[in-house]
Image (cartoon, rainbow, N blue to C red; front, side):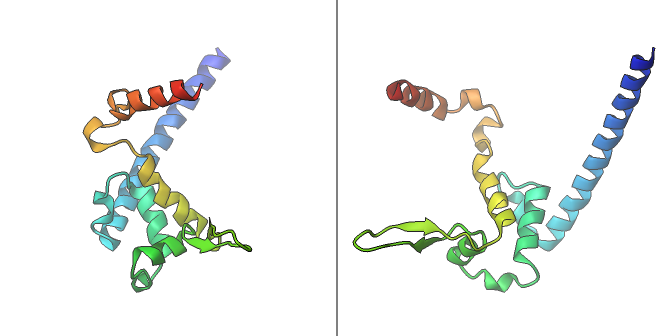
Length: 135
C-alpha cells in the first residue's frame, strides 16, 4: 500500500516538473527569439542552446565579426603548437567551454530530411560498412 502511494506521488511530481520545464522552455524560447530572431530557426538549436550562445556572446555581439572570432570565443580555433621541424596545431583552450558545448550540439542533431529517424539515414550503411572494414 505504501509503495503504491509513493509511486503515485512520484508520478504526480514527475508530471508537475515536466509541465514546469515546458513552461520554462517556452519562456526561454520567447526570450531567445526576442534577443536573436533567427537563432532558433537554425537546425539543431533549441531554447537551451540559444540561451547558452547568447550568454556567451554577451552584450556586445559586434566583437563576433567573423567565424574566426566565434571559434576563438568557443575555444575551437587552431593555434600553432610547433616545435622544431614539426608544423602542427592544437585547439585553443582559452575560451568559453559552455559556448563550445552549445556550438557542437548543432552537429549532433539528426538531419532535417529524416526527422530523427537515424535508421533511415543514408549514413548508416556507410558507417556499418566502415565498421566491418575496421575489424
